[in-house]
Length: 344
Image 1 (cartoon, rainbow, N blue to C red):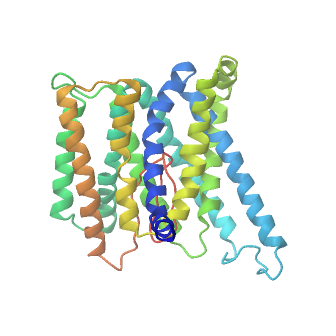
Image 2: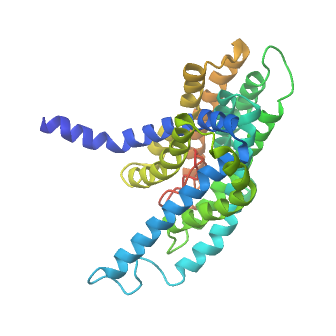
Image 3: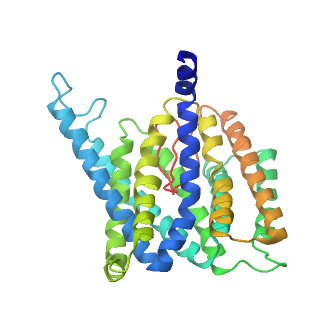
């Protein structure tokens, strides 16, 4: 029993990260179903406003606990540098605008395409991130990264083709744009979180608050108009997006990545597209056809290959500051040295 308990304890970080990938994989179907009962704007408001309120409460509790603890540092937060809150506010507003744009593109996009396509295409942010960093650092990509990117292009072409070679539908195009903004968000968050005195929880709270204000303005009216017709399924969808895909996923990622390697965390979180495809096919009965299925397999393979190639490319460039691409959810910052900027 002791051995089993020790083994479970040792595997807990991996299990938590894998669970987060599953939860994020289901966020596309949850958003699509909830938007069908209301609107994309209402979904964004319902997701961001409660999440921002909960994280604001968490920040307030942390600060109150730090200030009230006997023998704590006079800064009120262990390890907090002077001006850290001001830096979090400044950076959080900018990053929050980029995060809000990403979520808006994802949410509107998933209403115009399948949840399977959305979950697979957003995974391209893993491959777009090194393109952005290579341009910023003026450093050539490795052969492995170039190969994985070219393979991903083939996978995308097959995935969006349906029964034949066609241009992406508007939903697919929006999700591809979201993959670009998510990759940019990952790079920006990585640089911000690497700064001395950076507070990941405070930074994320500011980001979500910016989105909450924007989406309350855009989606508050539609949400109030639709909320009277919500049944148990819609309320469960909101709880899933707020508590599962945002709050629990963020805190779980924060906890688990302190107890495992960054590369292992990246691999586990990188299984999100696989779960998105499985959930969409099994629970929603979505069909993607033979070309789409081949494209999905190719795209997943390219993403996993790209994650490994990106890690090797980055390690060879040390001591260049280490940052990571998305995951998701849509997701969220991780402690240094890597950041997981996803909300699922």
